Each structure stands twice: as structure tokens, then as C-alpha cells.
Amino acid sequence: MTRQTFQHEGASPLPVSPIDTVSVIELDVAQVGVLQALFEDNAEYFHAIQGAPASATEAFDELTEELPAGWSFTRKYRLGWQEPSGALRAMANITSDLLAPGVWHIGLFMLAKESHGSGDAQKLYRSLEAWAFAQGAQWLRLGVVLGNERAERFWRASGFAECRTREGVEMGGQINTIRVMVKPLRGGMLADYLQAVPRDRPIS
Image 1: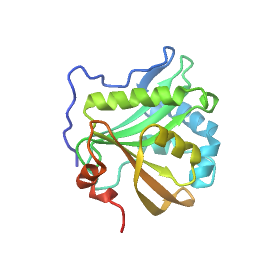
Image 2: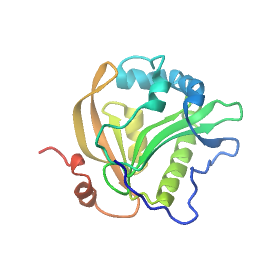
Image 3: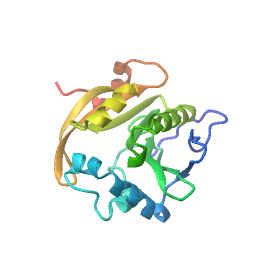
Image 4: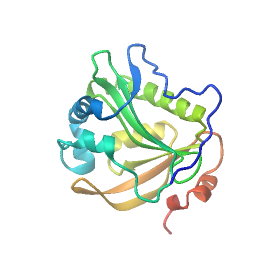
């Protein structure tokens, strides 16, 4: 099931890279090798969320994975910030109008290890947010594994707030608790978001 979203006039079909030497592309199976290299370079992330390194098919699975049956959305973007060499500085997947119109979900946002601490993550995230806003996004939503302190700090500093936790989520060979976090892009209160997305209401 899909929903029609609205796009502001003049909106770019892809984010604009804030780094002159890096271009933004849509990833597909032709880039599975460079995406796999990025994943293998970020071994700490995969150990944190699934208790093991990236599998040999991690990138292919990321590029071909479908959303759960019955979830409404408009489009799933798989984006790469690509160096002139072809290597990826970063990647993200983001789904528009997930579960409700105007809710854009960031499924994964990952930076090349060599760029950690450089400020690139903040620059790239801000460009991603600006692009989603220009496409009509009203809310950004994501999930963070409880205990992934680097990610939790980053998303809080970027303006996200927790709306609920989900326990018993299997990821790879590990069972995790997920913080579901949201950020309003056009004003509005958390109650407005929860009215639109009942799934994210806290469990009493």
C-alpha cells in the first residue's frame, strides 16, 4: 500500500551534498560492493546492534529488504554520499510517509569510520533533514538500540526525543530494546504525532 505525498515546488529529487568533493546517489545492487565495504568498516556498530560483524550479505540485504507487509509508505530511498574514488563517505535509508502522511523514517544513517569525529555526520544529517523538509516531511522518526550511546547522543543533539521503547526486537542474533524517537519539522506537539501514528504511543 502506498500513499501520495506532497513535494514543494523546486524541491530536489535527492539531497544536496554539503561536501564539494562528495556526490549523492541512489544506491542499488550495482553499488553492493562499496556498501559492503562501508558496513565492514563499521564493525563496532554491527557488534553493538546484532552481536556480530556485518554478514557477507549485509549490503545486499540492505538494498533489497522490503518493509513489513501492510505498512503504508510512498517511497524508500537508499542514499549514498560517494567519493570520487567510488567509496562511500556515508549512507542512509529513509522512507517517506511511513505509517502516516508526512512521517519520514530514517532506517539507517552510517558514516565511514575514518570520518567519525570530523563533523561530517552533522553536516550530512542537516542536508538530509533539509531535503526531507523540502519534500514535505512533517516529522522524522527513527529507532536507536538502547545502549548504543554514540547514536543516542547524536540523535538527541539533532533534536530527536523519545516517544516510546520497544522491547524484544531481534536484530541478527541479538535481542534489543529500541528507543523510538521523533522530531517535528513544522511545529506540532508529540501528542499530534501520536495521534497520527498510534503504533508509537507509549505502552501504559
